[in-house]
Image (cartoon, rainbow, N blue to C red; front, side, top):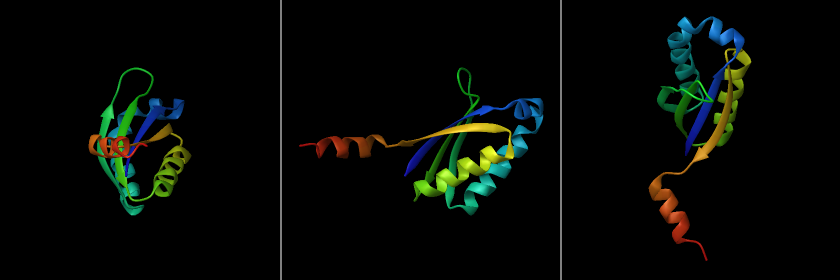
Length: 96
């Protein structure tokens, strides 16, 4: 399953923004321990500061990852489930 996480820096997170690359690496390691593969991390402009594309067998583990990331205090996250184009096409073809 694909999940898209958006993250916004907290006051703490932006004050130490120079540490962000190290924090991303630590997040990748945490995700791996939970059975999550971090596919991409993007710095973004607009409403959110970061966007992560992750893949996991369980949404429960992604929820745990988001909570663990938020508990550190550098970001607040939002998570949505994503379907690939092929999965979308299949779902739509199965509509009554």
